[in-house]
Image (cartoon, rainbow, N blue to C red; front, side, top):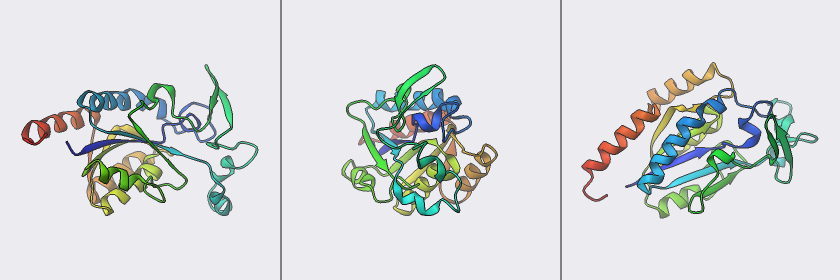
Amino acid sequence: MSTALLIIDMQNDFVWPGAPMETPGAVDIIPAVSSVRAFFDAKEWPVIHTRYIGDPWVHRLRDQVPWVETVLPPTRACVPGQRRSFDGIGDVAVEAIIDELAPKEDELVIDKVFYSAFSETSLHEELQKRGITSLAIVGIQTECCVDDTARYAVHLGYDVTLVSDGTAAGVPENQDWALRNFDANYGTVVDSVGLMKSLNSANMLDPND
């Protein structure tokens, strides 16, 4: 099978209420993301996580992009070495993927400092080594890191599917727009149940899998 699951930035400093880069709806998508991840695990298909790492390169954007302030001191959102507590969740590494989706030993983790998970990372090379030709993408933020990664993947020749109930936008009203635009111009958008059904059907028809 040549499809991998790409889980974008499901990190403590993005997901939990009160997080400095809290993504509205992030908590709500955890069940769908978990379900799709379990499906891929059961099939023994690749699961890849990305983490946004707060980096000094964004400082040049601080006058144009408001969220950059959260990466700077004293907040240091997603900066390794920083720890934070949330309601009911105490003292966690801010850049770490949430415990509910913690990477397993055989799951690749790609760290990035730009929006796209392909920009200045080894993701494309890792996918090529694994013979991956298509991606199912879940995670946050739909109109930013998810969209930028998905478009970049299309430009590199991958078939890309975004999972509607497995993604959440930084600005909630942008969710539907981002998904409609991607569906119209770049790839496919389905919900988690539809994704698993389509992958099962494709798998049954593939004599080489």
